[in-house]
Amino acid sequence: MKYNFLLGAVLVAMTGYGQSWTKQYDHVDECVCGLSLVGKGEKHGFVNKDGKLIVPLIYDEAMTFSEGMAAVKLDGKWGFIDSTGNVAIPLKYADAMSFHDSIAIVGSNNHYGYIDRAGKVVIHLAYENATKFSEGLAAVSKNGQWGYIDKSGKEVIPFKYGFAGSFDGGNAKVMKDGKWIIIDYNGKKVSDAE
Image (tube, rainbow, N blue to C red; front, side):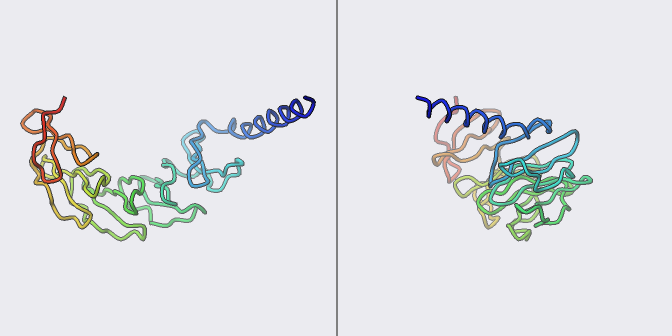
C-alpha cells in the first residue's frame, strides 16, 4: 500500500513537471515525429517531448511535422524544415501543405502543384486548387472546374465538376450540375449523394 502511494506521488510530480514547460507558450500541439509545434505571440517553433526548444520561435506560421518535415512560413514565404530545424526545402512558396505519401502541395502565383521530399516539382503548379492524394488520385481544379489526376499528373477523370472530394473506399463525392453525386474511379456515377 505504501509503495502504491509513493508511486502515485511520483507520477503526479512527473506529470506536473512534464506540463510545467507548456505554460510558457500560447499553444502547444500534439507531439508528432518527436516534436511539438509551439507558439508564443505571433511566432512559432518546435520543442521535443521534454519541452526543450529544438527549432527557435522564428516562424510566422508552421504546421506539425509529417513524414519528417514541417511546412513553415517566414516573411510571406513557405518552405519545409527537417526535424533538426534545418531548411530542407527553401522558403519560396506562397502556400504549402504537409507531406503525405512523400509529396506535398505547394502554391505560387495562385497556382498549385506538387513537390517531392527533395523539393523537386513532380506535378507542375498549374491548378487553381489542389487536394492531397487519396487512393492514388487527387482532386484538382482549373478554369473553375474540378477533376482528378494521378501521381504522374495525368488527368484521369475530366474537369467537369463544380467541386470534387477525396476518394474513400473507391468512391468520391462530387458536385455535378448543382447536385451532389457519388462517382467511382472511372468517373461513372454510382449514386446520388445524401
